[in-house]
Length: 437
DNA sequence: GCATGATGCTT
DNA sequence: CTGGAGCATCATGCC
Image 1 (cartoon, chains in turn orange, red, brown):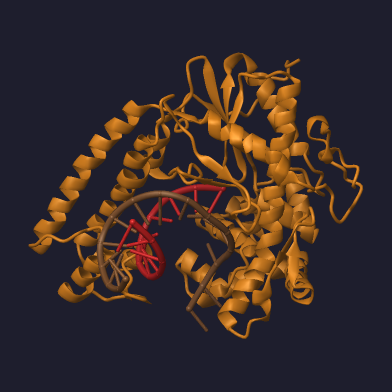
Image 2: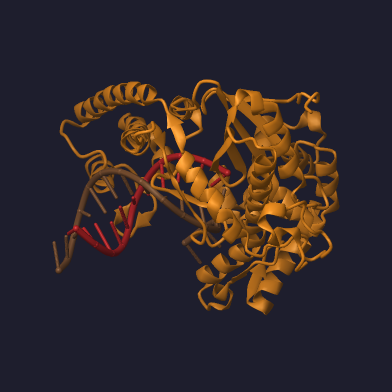
């Protein structure tokens, strides 16, 4: 393992798989990837400022209308950005039922307000105001101000910030640009590429669940991934004990939430909050899941036990994270430690895998002299490239091949590929041109 | 001006 | 009392 090709930056091949416990070498991944991150930052993401400007006008107008309607209803003006003033309005002046208490008063967050939104017509208006104001402040005005001379936004990418080994983007953060709903698409349409170029986004499909499968060796999951099944549907079939054609959209949604919950070290309470069901039902779903996937249960138990015994957990590459919280006498802190013991090996291994893939891709771009195509963004399980049209086929082939083969797990790694002229209108590429040289 | 809390966006 | 990891904005209170 000490002779891994990884230790030679300019001559990396595929990684060593000789050591079963640590199937790849993580020596100095972060040191090697630093230059690549600096380059991504220098390249930046081209922005269509007209799209931003037009959206700002639209949003400005909407905010004005919303605040006028709200103030008309209540008969006076308040600062709608102040949760303190919103709380006074709802829970004192309007005497609506209040939910959980925070340090400074009763909560007015989205989850709380949705529970009482039918009790007063201004609550949906407040919720919409919040969404739109968030857009205006964080994703329109702020981003516009960060466009530099070259028409691009240059984020900074950092290692050694996230305790899981993930890469962090800041100033500005380009890893949390909205994607859901109509606003997500509208904003992402402002992220563009120059003429003669195309945007390519490739993301790992279910990498966390695949890593969980690798660690747990759960036979049902191995089978599902080997057959490239819809994993949430497959889980729904297990939990609800039905065949695929009988699974409803709602049952699949529940299974998807359970799958994510497992990775995060779920509790019945947490799942009940996410699914808006009672805790008894949530507990039943978890129990059923663990009954149906016994090797996952065994793996999760073992993860906690080993973390307590050793004081740390580790990733596939052997990167350790110490978890002193496991010995806390405070139940809350200890539970939090147990969730870390579950989540860190999974999320940390995923982070390693994509960082290794980024290095492989970078090397191959250099080797193949694809100098006009640039990696511009990494969003945890996704890579975004600004690609010369003529290099498109070659880039897609390389990125897919490197991402899927960077490390051999007991099940295959899969990516999905999208292309577009902007980040808001991406189309999945299902058929790959196999006539590539 | 600075720290903290509340909120909300992503994976 | 309970979903892992982050960052940014705004309000508020204190210096």
